[in-house]
Length: 447
Image 1 (cartoon, rainbow, N blue to C red):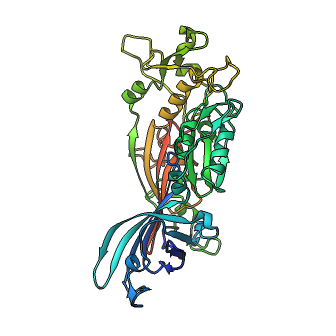
Image 2 (image 1 turned 90 degrees about the horizontal axis):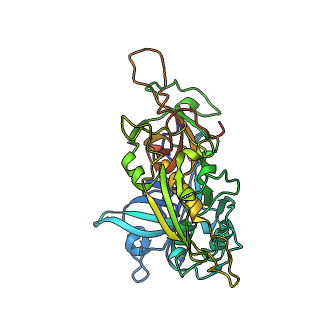
């Protein structure tokens, strides 16, 4: 199975002036690579142990350590290539294109003596530095859809060519950049976007980076994906057989090594956030009117069957034992604000900019429902997996019966919120944080 050792084909660090390079493969103890759907950049950590006599001093010509000889001061470029070693591990390659190189953001855990040095390199993608050195000062007109603005910021402010999937948005939004950092604007826009194929219950996007580039994805479309893999928890290992020229057996590659439930519902927090029901009151400065009571009430049950779920439909308990009213029928949060009407153009428009009175509660519902269940899971290394992917998991039910059964509530489809691909000289594995919005094995995501 693909927990075997990793093969480093290339790990090269360049000095800031790009005149010195050092091959770090021999001294690299471990590599950890990270993705998260709520993080705009990918990151990595390299743990290095070095003998010390590595690079010649410019002054004396004597051999010095990497830390002083390169020297390590931050912003050095690092190219990484890790070989594939199984059917589920295609490896990682950040070496073929300089725009995909990692950059050193900080150095920690520095230990050195006369014989040896060790330190940890914290790496980020190039765009992390571009984000800190640029500001969005442009005015975006109300005729632009949100995905058009996202593409413009990625290309003209972050200057990146690493653009993955940018989902189309149906709503238009005019705004001023106000000299904010690009990532701040992009994450802010994600909360206002509605997908082009909206079923009137699908507001809410996420902006993040994976090994395939920057992603601006609708949560509803992510949930609607087919599962990329199926993993099963079992205490039995299959016998090793010849498989495609290796000793890997697919069933072992897709075995859950360990897992734990981090969170199983947080009802009070969801009520506080207005996940199930909220009341919206917005003031229109053009007509001097407030949101009508009929339009202001938002209830989750009104969107049953419209929004996609990873599990079964959401069921909520009653307010009390002697009441027929459940927690989704009473507003638990009041949202107030001033509508952005006629502020971005010379000609006064009666159209609401981005329509927060309609979509804000939907986005709150979608973001908060995602964390109904949270699992931590470790599996054999699978670099095909990326943040935002959907996987199917089978967990055993607790029973004394010899019959193999799976828990119908906990098993099912999960989305990968974040992952870490770990590589070292003895083992390789993938750790993930999985989330989903409802319970049950079969959901309403077109399965």
